[in-house]
Each structure stands twice: as structure tokens, then as C-alpha cells.
Length: 529
Picture 1 (spheres, rainbow, N blue to C red):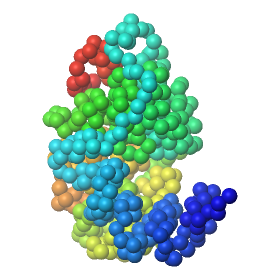
Picture 2 (spheres, helix red, strand yellow):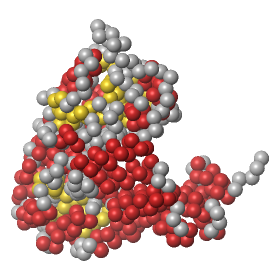
Picture 3 (cartoon, helix red, strand yellow):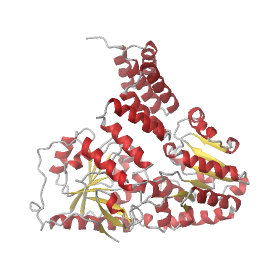
């Protein structure tokens, strides 16, 4: 048997779970500076990222570029780390340098398209970017199983409509707080529900399985095999819940796995794929006039989704300002969403209001990394650090109890919160957001949510208005008390938590989509209210 090279030995140790041994072996390769040094650096960065030591991961990759010169794989990996830390300018620059080296890297090209679109203020440009990406990079799988046509479908059939949901997030992921009511409450006499899990299962997956009559773990299937499998099941309507995110199967959709294909809230920009017929949305997310910015036809419901809060998180707390004698704001969104513009705005709130503080929950896994990497961003922008606490990632239980230490939440912009905003409202924690006048869903999600819940006073339209509103709350904290009293009740009475209505509404959409297919009617916008 041939002896393993040092690099192969390091990779073997990593696969066996000996992280410390792998790190030592790979570090020795890196320090020697041989032909495998660059690859060793990337594996070391992978280890550091997995342990949430993002600053160490970035340092080793930056050192590799300085020592060895530009390398497409190193730049691509570094770009993702920059974005994780919220430095979107550096992320886009690194991705561009990587694509200059290897233009056909579909993943890096998609990352760059997403990052640029998140900060784009022209919806037409976002649509164009994803249509161009899909046209150039999406590789269609082959399948020996033919797709049924409308004429091949028995219109008199009385069997339930077969609906398949495709996602890698049927587990411990924000998606579970949206999808659970539908899996649990679908009318099984009318709908045969299939779930296609495209990634590793976990304990939450086991919980969700209880509600799904037909659960398929398809992680091991390649795209061609998955395409054949879905067609063999004669799925009528196939629903994408991932979009352009991890473990998606858009290649299968692009090859037309089912007669009717739909995308939902997993990715709120258009996908740019003409084979996806409909996008499930609502009138807040996609107001009249937004149709031209989506490749998919829009199916507008009363509410984009249902919402179920985390378990064991029912406690509500009084406003902590009464105990602290000062007002505490908190940022709960992922660090990558914290733009320089948002940080500057929050800094100004603090500077104008000495009787206020700020907590930022970061993506780092420990206090040392938070201090070494994220805190310098705040220092650089002039934050009064004696009134700011940057803390590492919280457990779910800790996260859902932050209303005991914070009076209200600050939403990130231009990319706003998603499920984070709903979690905050469930805690009774008001969320102050800035939403533009454009219809870009990634930037208006929190504003749409707050308006639909009936908390319009939490929505501002400019930096100055946000600073003014925050100042008003800080200087008159009784207003915060009034808001906190309304926040959870407003969410509970909103369409988001009328679970039965949301499920019946979705089923009505599916019926109309299928009726159109059976009658060979064109795919056009529709609404169900």
C-alpha cells in the first residue's frame, strides 16, 4: 500500500474527526511552504470556520495570498468568509479576483450575484443578474423518465394532488418555523405531501417527519437520479424552498421535474429560471407593479407564510430600562447583514443619546474572536465602546430570552431580517427597521412583516427618520412599554399565526395552479385572498 502524503494524511485525520491532529499536520505543510501549502491553508481555514474562529480563518487565507499569490480557490473561500463577517465590499472584490482567474466557477459567480443584488437598488438589474447566471451556469441533469403532459393526466382522477417540497433545511434551520404548520395541517384527503430532504438530517428532522406521510432523504442522489425519482412518483406540484442557497436542487427544477413548479420564501429575489412557473408571495412583498421584476409568475396570498415560534420560549419580560435606568438596544441579525451604513446610523443614535446602550450578537463562536474581529469594526466607526457589548453567538434558549436585557431591537439594512424579526416580535421585543421605497424583498422583508402585524410605527424610510424614532423612544421610554405590550398580541392576532387560514390559502393556490395546467391555460399571475 502506498504511503499517504502529508496533505493526504491531514485530510484523512480531518475526515476521521481528529481536528487537532489535522490542524497540526496541515500547519506543518503550510509552514514548509511547498507545493501543497496553498491547499493546506484552505483546509486550515475550513477547520477554523467550522469552529467559528473566523478571524483565524481569514488570517491564514490572506497570508496564503500574500505568500503564494492569487489563487482562485483561496480567493473564493476568502470571499465567503468576508461576507460572513459583513464586509461585503471585500467579499465582492475577492470573488471578482477569483472569477478573473477561473471565470466558469458557478458557485463563486452566484455568490457575487447574490451579494451585489443585496445592495442593489434597481430591481430590474437584480432580475437580469439572476437570469444571466441561470442561463450561463445552470447545468441540466439527464433523466430516462419522461415528464407527464396535461393530456396524459387523467382529468377525472380522484386521487389527492401530489405536492412535493424540496429543501435541505428540513431540520434545525429557520425554515422549520415557517414550514411546520403546512406539514402538520395539510388536508391529507385532498393532498398527498412529499418532502425531499437534500442534506443531513438532525433531531428536528425527526420531529418534522411525524407530519409528512412521504419523507424522502435524497442527499445521496445526484441530480439525474433525483430527477428520475421525482418523475417516477408522479409529483404534480413541486415546491422549491431553498432558491439559490445551500443544498438547493434548482438543476432538477430547470429540467422540469414536475408539471407545475413553484418557489417560495427560501430566496426572495427572483431565481431567473423560466421553468419555475410561480412564486408564492403576498401583496406586501410584491405590491402591484412588482411583476416585471420576477421571472416567475406571482401567486399572491394574504400572507407570505405562517409562523410557529420556538418551543419553551413563552416568557415575556418587562422593559429592562426601568431596572437599568437607561435604554438598551440590540442587534440580532447575522453579522454579515450589518452594513457600514447601518453601523454608522446606530453609532449616531448612541452619540445623540448618552442614556442608551447597544448589544450586538455576533456570528463568532467565542468572546476572543468577537473581540479580535468584530469589535474593531465598531471601534473604527467611532462607537462609544463603554456603552456597547459585542457578544458571541447565543444558544436558541438564550436568544429567545434577550428581551429580558434589551428594550428594543435594531434591524439591519439594506438587507433586513427575516425569521429574526418574527422571533423578536414573539419575545415582545419591538423591531425598528428602515425600509426603502423600492420593492426589493430582501430589503423590505422586516418592514412588510411589521406593517402586516400592525406595527407601522416601527417602520422608517430614511437614516434620519430611524435616528429620530430611536431617539424618541430612548428619551420617552414609556413609548417602549406601550409597544412591548402590543408586540406579541399583534403578532398572535396577525395572519402569520392564523395557521389554519394560511394552509387552506396555500391549498387554494395549488388547486388553481393545477386547474390551469389541466386546461392548458398559460402561466400568469394570480391571487388568492
